[in-house]
Image 1 (tube, helix red, strand yellow):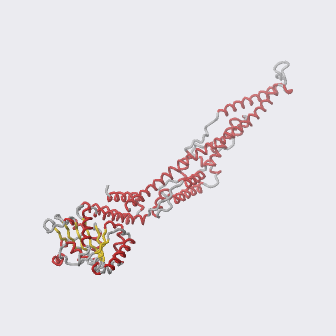
Image 2 (tube, rainbow, N blue to C red):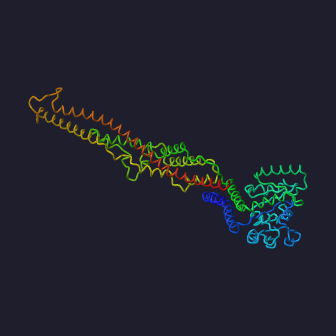
Length: 532
């Protein structure tokens, strides 16, 4: 892949990643650059378009005449006005289609058919040399011609003169904005014959410093004289080298892509962003946990399991009383969410929870996108918390609703203890009935003659006392065990709920934000590649 292809691909990737974030007025020039590059390469890769541009009096036309090897006075009728560009093409095939595309009128096109010329100029084979009107002409049309033709140049030769080489007009309007095209530029200090050797060196040093400040460090600067011919061999050799390399046109188009990329970077921003760092993500999850009512649900699960343990393991009469107590989680599965079931115990209303979750999500997104330009940041925030995203609380409710809180579990020891409690209850009832019947003489208090009476109690009373004592002890032990089990059930439920909220946060926030940040990274990396 060529440098141009790599940059065009990178710039396209950046623009595709940006989507609607970038103003069409900014994306439009990029699309035009793609089209321009493709048209230029389709027309000709064998020609190099070199333009001579400069101020009034810089000697462009004389320099053009010396490079072309033609006496323009003899062919001056081909250039009826000074508001048009004059072109000279080397090579038997000419460059008519290319010059037509550039917009140079046929009457202003001159062809050097090297096969007929003597001597043949092989070094310039494929050269298309254009002499532009003065950019600082009082005629506005001249500036328009310069601006138009400059868009098509493969190589800029900036022709400056000793008096106005630092003139702000050409530097501010053309040279500085084209710093991205330094690889497609040459600078000529013409009319060097007017300066002494000392003054020429000072002028060259000063000009090089100016160019370095403008981003043209390393660009060849050649001192020439169209009168004496000084510097012309060096200029011809540099132009010939660019022609021979066949890279001038690509260098220019690379500069175009680089220029567009840098403008997009300036307006769209390419600053790195922190992303959703772990502490911020954890703080967000904590807020979601609170807004989803996880602590209250865990407490309710603990309370519910403790009540169920009491009902299942208490002495039957006490257990029946426990069934009458309200259990909010008992109604789950009948159209109510766990959060709704415990809403009355939550410290803030559902509407406030919803607003709090949205605010926390917005704040986390703002932290994650700190450094982004305003359009990018607004786009990312809208994608995460805007109208396009589902309500966070609704997502969290769905996640919580899908968690098995373990309310249907009934430990085996509950059944065993419940059976023992019923056994003690029946023993007390049997003993009490036996004792009452013996009082009325219906039965004997002793089942046989000489039956033992521990602690002086008959067997019926022993059944009543023993049953009550065993039931109390069993109740106390089972309540303690039930409390331990309930706390464990609450902790398990809380852990499951937090895991569900973590997964939901990963899905509705982290994954979505990561996708947006990946899009921003494609934008940044694309512009970095295209603009380097």
